Image 1 (tube, rainbow, N blue to C red):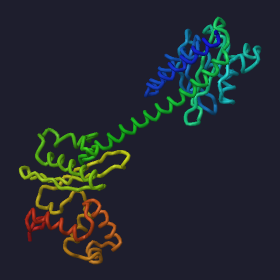
Image 2: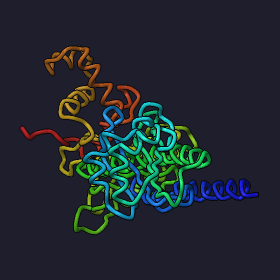
Image 3: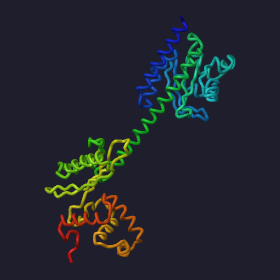
Image 4: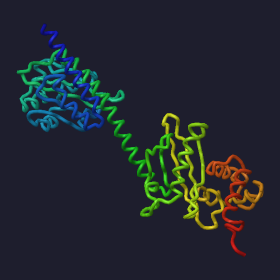
Length: 364
C-alpha cells in the first residue's frame, strides 16, 4: 500500500509539473514554473536550475530556491569538486550523491562542504538537453531529515529534465521569433512605401509606419480608400484565380493623387499577402503607370520601349549591352505586372494619354 501511495504521489507531482511547463512561453516563465512546481515532483529542501557550458561545466546562469544563500560558496569551491555534477556531465543521466561515489568521497568533497552551509547533505542532479545539446542541470538538495533520494526520485528527475528541455526549446524558439518579428517591423517602418500585410480575406495583420499615416497629420483621402478596395480585389483574385501577384493603379480625381498598389501572395502555408503602395509623381512628368516602382534606368528603358525601339537600338541609346537591356526589361515586367513589350507599351501610352499628349516632354 505504501509503494502504491508513493507511486501515486510521484505521478500526480509529474502531472502538475508538466502542466506548469506547458503554460510557460518565455524562458523567465519556464524558470518560474520549474521553481514553483519542482517540489511537487521531488520533495526537497532546495531546488536549482543551472545553465552551464557543456564543455567546461562552468556556470552561465543560475536560478534557485534555497533556504540559505550558499550559491556563492558552491561556485567558489564546490562546483570544481562536485562528483554528482561530474557524473551527470560524463554520463548525461540523473544521479544522486548516494550513488555517484562512495560515502567517504562524498563527505570529503567541496560540493558537500558548500551544501552544509545551507543545512543540506544529499544532492541529486539531472541533465537538461535542448535539441540534443546539454543546456544545463536541475539540482535538488535535502538535509538528513529527508533521507537520501530514492529510485523513484531519479525517475522523476529524468522525466523533469526531459520536460524542462522541451519547454526550454519551445521558449527559446518563441523568444527568437519575437525578436525577429520586432526587427522586421523596425525595418519595414523605415521604408518610405506603405506596406500592408493581410490575410486572404483582406483583414489587416500588420501596417508599417507609412501605411499608418496618410501622410502624417493629414486626413485620409480618396486614393487610400481606393487602396483598400484594391487590396480587397487582389485578395479575391488570389483566392478565386490562384494569382500570385496583382498590380493596380489607384487615382483620386479630387486630390489628383496616384498610387500603384502591388499585392504579393505569400507562401500558401501563411495564408496571407503583402501589399506595397508606391507613390506616383503628381507632375506631368509621371507618364509611366508605375513610375516610382522603377529605378531611373528602368524608367529610361521602359520609355525607349514605348517608342518602339528594338533591344539593339535601346542598347545603343542607353550605352549598355543587349543582355543588360533584357535583364532590365525582365525587372520592368515583374514590377509593373505586365507579360510582354506590347502590354508595357499599352500601359505607358494609356498613362500618357491620361496626362495629355505632351506629358513628360520638355518644352523646346
